[in-house]
Image (cartoon, rainbow, N blue to C red; front, side):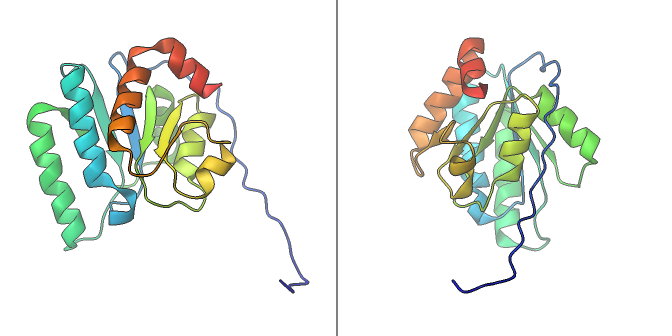
Length: 178
């Protein structure tokens, strides 16, 4: 488009050796608490998954939202309702890189219902840590992962079904990760 001084700066993501997974199936999401990230839908999805698995799973959400923000308040209310019957942990403050990598290694599945992503770094980092990821079509992520783990935007029931399938099958998770 006419630019002459162009440089490419590679984004380096070190592959991790992975590690042991949690005893019970664990889902992980990392990102801001904003409408575009689909956290209210993610909580609803997790409640469906937890009901199907009879509570033998948990969800960890790492991220923060703006104070006095309507969406953050709605998220906190939905989280409280979800925590009444489901194992949900919210880490609202930043975590150190080593702690984040440990969470990414230990999770069984990374989940994102984001409406748009430029690159989807947490999804890619989780895969690099040995954790398969599923996500809605959202921009750059499906291109980087060549469609692996991508679910068409808005297909809520497909997302729930795929999550359950992956949590119930070591083989399916290994196939997705590969």
